Length: 388
Image 1 (cartoon, rainbow, N blue to C red):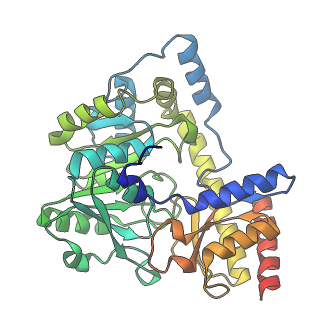
Image 2: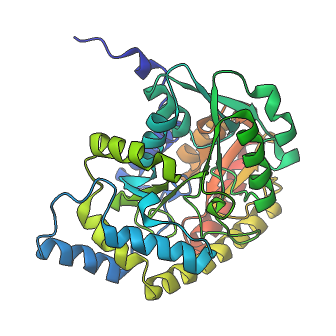
């Protein structure tokens, strides 16, 4: 038996995987499980996108691409920024990666040294802190709560920044809260980070899925902000594993060298499909889906209010609602497991996203239609009644 690297011990598993594994077991035994735990809506890539992937295979376009991505895809992404967000981005600054996860791994290697730390809010996407472990660094989580919509109080940033701090990582729309940061907030965050001599990254993987607030890009603020995005969420291409990072011009050579070594290239077939995903007809379909998600969001918010379950974040974007369950349990993980085992509704406990008051919160993903959401609400109501 070999000895695992010590860093493996510092990486926590997804708590939601315990929920998901249990849900699959229940489904296999014939139970009707309602999945509100995984961040993947019941949409798939537009048919024309799938056809473009099939065409690439049939035309034998399956070899390696440039390490930074297909030139035509990089141009299409740049054009999308120009058309939708009125922001000019040079295609050379766009590095296409195997999912947004690949972009985060690249950024960790590019900008964070061993022994460094990176500031990020608690709660946040858990893999962010795990990617830092891979480069010998760590996340320094800053406690947030409902009083400030789970955003870091920027005036207090200096209290957390030290000599080992490399940068600040934010997300908008955010997972798990669904909150959207304003342009003014990101501008202020960037000003402070520059003053401290660090880098700012904004994770925009849920960009486009905004229902309230401003759908913008941090790239409109400065060319020195790192921005990560993906085809997984807005474009419903989760399993295609394709994302990108936009880097400052001064970081292109370093990012290219890392991409060559870490990935060789992103999946080629997915890249050809993604070119089609940025066509106007597909974008129109993505917009129709966004409107459907908003209808689900409003339906779920109304249903949670009816049950007396407080929504503690604005739920302005993505497809998540962050709920305080401390009025009915002192352990969100146990509550989620009980709900699944007794009423077959799968939710994600707050423990996945951080540590500060995580036992109080549960994330709902409105990734199924209103009929299933209503059935889930009825089952949750029965569970609450039974447990009270």
